[in-house]
Length: 243
Image (cartoon, rainbow, N blue to C red; front, side, top):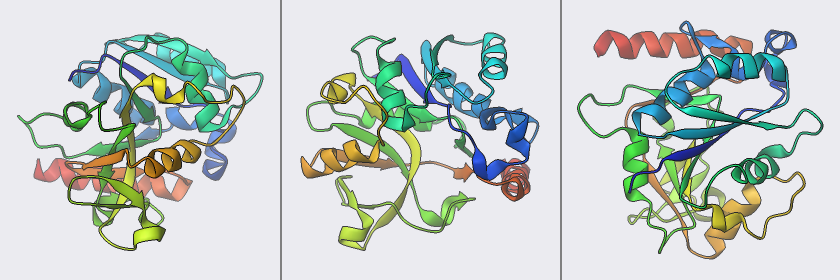
């Protein structure tokens, strides 16, 4: 399967990144000379995505100006200036600007480096792994030891066939959610129109036995604090040195 559309969650306040985010939205903070959101957008372009919705709230004017200058795919804005919708409500609002075809859901402040050249990208593999008949969501996951900036905790336990359960419930074969999902918009047809957390729908998919994951190629980075910027840049330098 090739997925041609995406929703990028980018409206958070970035409170743990203060004072940097007092004057700039978190997705525009540069890591190794590149705004964080551009790592996400570039990955979408490489996977063949043609249209992406990006939600905005904090320093929304800066976000819109940056996105107008991005080349490679059509970008639509989901405006949350009036009220933050949390990640679930923001996703539901943004999906209304897209078709009913399968969609990638991405976070603007989580990205990866070190994919093996000449092989399908992580998002291409995620799209190929996603099976709408068996899955409500397919997640990109990563081993804890291949992360930088994470809190040191596993999110899910993964069975041999890729089926996921909460790590706290199984306590083995732990993986970290790497901030990328393939899914059908129809999974959210019963969702509320106000703010809610995506974890509600992760749990719904688990209860139905329809949350699956596939493993990331490379190294995953999350940048949540000013101190984490240097850690991420060091990880990127390390991977580039061995590329």
